[in-house]
Length: 381
Image (cartoon, rainbow, N blue to C red; front, side):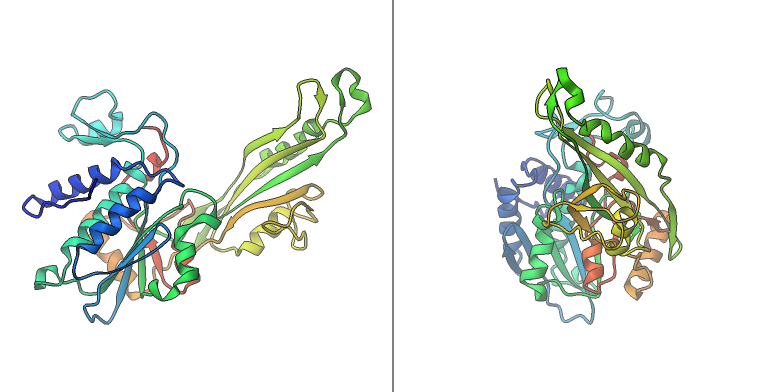
């Protein structure tokens, strides 16, 4: 399959065609390669672009001699499918169309399938812009130079993230004055993002036969206190640069035990803390486990010296920093005014983690702006 753009079709038809084509490419994390090949080939056909590839990340840049450069970035991978691949276009009245969507768009077809919202619709827009903003006429010459980044492994642990890898290997490819991440935002601006840390809270016991339980100590029972602490915790809503970021602290996995007749000697509660951009990674970790616990990625279990889980074993699993809104940059202000003019919407806070945080670390102001309802991201329909 080769991505194609029919230049004689209408803009809507071209966008729908590109979206359909990339939706038909299975690209669950770890399987992005074939879609990346298609994207690379499509971009190489555009004579005005310089195209580079690192792993399964493709970077394409214009060189129109403009004084400023804007980066448009989007990930190609999706979360695992749940009976929602291959995609299909649903005609008006189809029972698979969500009620609120049918009400808002009663006469429109709806593209159904994994990745439509997060974030292949935005990828299609980026591919369309990459092909059509070619600098050949005043109408197709942007006011800024553009860098398009299509990357892999956004939906999994940070160490696999393709954008992270290309920044580390080729920092000169990712330079600019402003960046837009095409994560789903209902076409409104969402500034900054919450940071995230994931870690196991560990209890230890003594194994024994369940018929003689008094000979052991039940690690799963000990985990009850961990769950009580989670239930008692009240997540904050923090205002940062005029935007409200709602934090979250949740157990997302729990594991323990080695047999149905064995008292478990270990239990692990996997916890995810989403923290506002008023905190650094170190400050967020200190709130959970104390400032001097010593728990870092890859260094095993350490005892929490303070914080919510004081006294328990902690093993870090993943961490990504937060990002402030970045709306004070001149290009960001221009975008805020444009979106307000077109949609009437003011910027909101991005509650999930996105790669705006990576751009923030590079000193590049960045926002989230993309097609799709963020409330539908990762849902099976």
